[in-house]
Every structure is written in C-alpha cells, then in structure tokens.
Length: 264
Image (tube, rainbow, N blue to C red):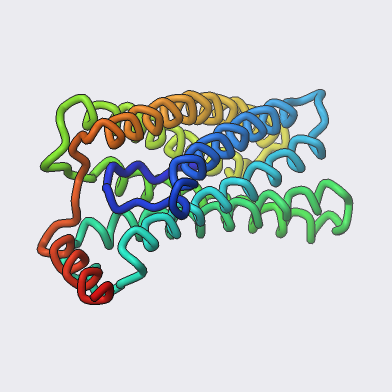
C-alpha cells in the first residue's frame, strides 16, 4: 500500500485544534494496518493458518481504505473542495487528489481479491469453479498492486519549490519505501497467479510469492514508522513558522481571495 506524502500547507486532517491530532491518528492507524498486514502475510506461510492470514489481510486492507479516504478528504478540505483550483495547479490534481484516489481503488481491488481467496479456502466452490475464482482473485490483486505502484510513482514525482532540503529528504525517505513495497506486492501477485503445468511448481511459486509479500509488508512497516516521524517533523516545522509548500499556478492566491470575499 502507498500513502499520500504531502507538505502542502493546505492539508487539513481535522477542524480547528483537532487538525494535528487527526493527522497523528491517520499516521497511527496506517502503522497499525501495516503491522496487521505483515502478520497476515506471515500466517499465509505453509503450515500456518491461511484462513486467519487472509482475515487479517482483509482487516488491514479495510484500514488502508479508510486512511487513504482520510488523506483524500484532508487534501480536498484544505482548499474548501474548490475543484476549479485543480485546473490551476496540475500537481494538486495529479498527486494530492489522484494519488489517494488511486490508492483507495487499488486497496478495494486488493480487498476483493483477498476476500475471493478466503471464499475459495472455505470450500464454497467445486474444483473447477475454485480454479476460476482463484485466477480472478489474483487478477484483482495484481490490479490493486499495480494501482498502488502507480500511486507511489505519483507521490515520488512531487516537486517542491519552497521547502528546504531537510523536508524534501524526509519526503523521499517515505515515498521510496512505498514505491519499493508496492512493486514487491505487484511481483508477488504476478508470481502467485502464474499458471504452471505441474502442481508442485504452483505450490513453490505461491510459497515464494508469500515470502515476497512478507518482505513487501516489512518495508511497508518501515515506511509507516518513517511517515509518523515525518508527520511530527512537519507539524513542528509549521508550529515554528517554518515554510510549507503553497498551491501553485495562482491557485493559492485565488483561494485566499475567495476566502476573503466570503468573510466580507
């Protein structure tokens, strides 16, 4: 899973004095989700409880959907849902808005694929149906992972003009692990979906896919820790009057003017 990484001063995770608190909640829930996902992937190893692993993965993915929706709303609320500003600032549209939206869709696809695998494991289908559902489930997982990677690329492509080198380093420190993790999840999904002619090859490939997913989840936990550190650093920077990134292309000026007109 990838997560929005932004130092825009317009981000608004909650109203008034709750703004910083809700951003901490967002980072904490994300961290919990990555831990649950890692445990779920470990439980998918041979000899462990596959059913429990899939259930834990579903819980983690549901939390990831909520976190990404919160990220999306935080960006929209930051400029009062004035969608006309998106035409002035392409990065606002392509990164702060499109990235979390893509991540939400990717997480939902991943959730649906994982749920389908759980249904197969419960024995709801006969042998032929189970094979078809499993193939379809892996296609959804691959699609979800691909969207995660696309969102990671969007995050990593953000260009900042006003913030200092330390803040930009923190941004890359978070976005690069996200990109690595989502890429590994994509590789894991492709390997797990591989149609091999011999059953032993399928079993070996899917066991390898689980190990790759465990590695991806571990990187995601690291990214979650770094993200929490980033949130604390950015909030301290803002409290000290440090410079955060405004909207570009005249969008920040128009937003300020429209807000002043509404107050008068």
